[in-house]
Image 1 (spheres, rainbow, N blue to C red):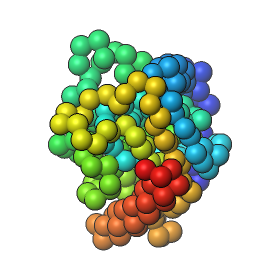
Image 2 (image 1 turned 90 degrees about the horizontal axis):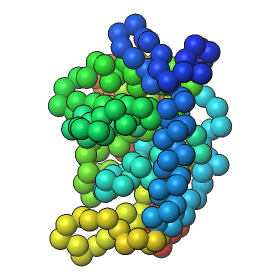
Image 3 (image 1 turned 180 degrees about the vertical axis):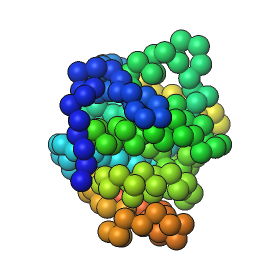
Length: 231
């Protein structure tokens, strides 16, 4: 059973036992900023947003091939979104800004307990957590998945919604610069699914099986998204 405590719903942060959980208000502000920027700079086409459950904890799992993928999902998601963002992005003025809009800094090279507590706290209060399960920018084809997504999904019991961002990377460019202004970017949401086997076990073998299950579902969704959009 998921707990949805009222504490923190009106504020920006909730103090957890071992750290701070970002509250929904900052993420809502980030979503409004994302809507303006993403729709002002490009032409997002959103398919299947209705598949995201309207209430309760949800994990959005997206492919990652460009830096704009995260901001695009923050602006496109029908619900305020808290992304796990590499700690290297939290530099200079971006640090307080990203934290103020509810994003979570994570050290990708270690078991970051502070980030884990914050992410699980978001799900515990019924929020939406965004993860790029490949861990870093790549070809965006889900060929290499880290186990973090499986852990959060099995531990929280939250359904996983696959999402594909297509068109943010322009083929043929030696440097992955920004896609042309006002170009179309497709964002395709898939059907929610449970990553675990229903047993609730968090053994190594259970996590490996959940990771494989997630990879199969995300890869299938990416194929579907490409066929649907003609990408």
